[in-house]
Image (cartoon, rainbow, N blue to C red):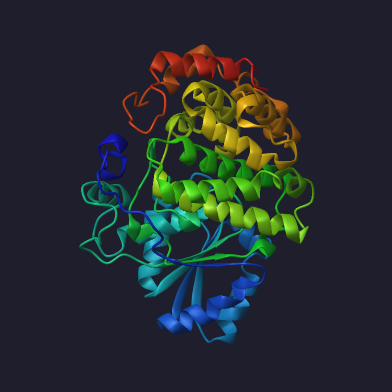
Length: 405
């Protein structure tokens, strides 16, 4: 399906840019009442996962809304890899019944994706899958013929970039993950406050920042990259690479949290303007069949695909290396891709990705890997190096057996 989408087709003139307003910096969450007043939005559906709500993660925004006289309700029936059923049976009716003007999505990728599921349906009279398929039939950059619902995105994790991305991932009843993709679900506002990243558990911080780093690197070596996306990719890598380990060990240090916040934002913008290569073209089955988190799946696939693409992308990986490790920069003539591969393996160890376990430790077998091959698109033009199912299986097998652990 993705291969037939206009975004994933070679285009002589492809739209790039940013269609939203972004605030970034310590305390920028305080801009929300001003945004609501400027837009004349008076009824708000807060979208937040149950853990965020229980931990008081919505309290400050609730207090702001109360002070401003804004009516609100909270939709929190959200699980990791959010369910189409929950969004359609709870979230969409809530938005309509309260006659909401806007959603404020507070949380990580699953929260943002849930809000986007509500937004894309809007007043179309369709379900999420139907609306998503209609969007696939049109340009992702042009307005839909039906009214969709606006979003103010407030990320509290690092990795998905969903606050600045036109994509979502929503789980259908059969377990398949659909990927709605259209500018109608790009949040109208993104409020990227690094103060909200200070209390993340260490393992969540590690996985989500690795998701952002992979977005930055993969969008850089994707054949759909362009001058604008590459600028964003490199800026993201420059912020994330030197700060990721320090942030993992102490999320409350403002300097590192701010760098990570900026890096994740830039990575999302790069992703929104470049799109997938092999890592995101092959990691969903790992989450679906093994229950490994998306960020962990990205992290364990990064070293092998850097190695695999090394002959094609050596110059790009040289730049990635020197931005990530400025104190260990090497001259172009001295760089070999294996140097970066080994440092990425070490980075996964330093971040305790998957607690040091392999896919085999999660129950992976060759038979499961054969199931992972279903749906892999060998012909996607964004891959810098042609990748067959046989080659992908070999990479899966090496990862399963601990070659890159």
